Length: 104
Image (tube, rainbow, N blue to C red; front, side, top):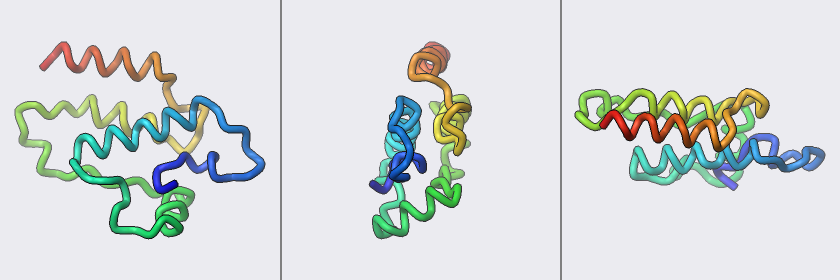
């Protein structure tokens, strides 16, 4: 629950692919930071944080890493947009991530 899309926890909202894209962005964060999203929060606090528009912060130490690509963070941020219709599809996100990998 701590990384569900805001609309996924609303009882009246239909669960859609955009929810999965949001949750995938949280997995992207976990992979980048090597820690669980909102690990320091209770589940209830994490849900409230996400529902109020809060998102985890990317550590600044990555900026100096040779393998760091700001495009990865850009895709991640777009995938956790508060507006589901503004999130890229999985196909678009995957294609952009492939392009990033090709540059490393």
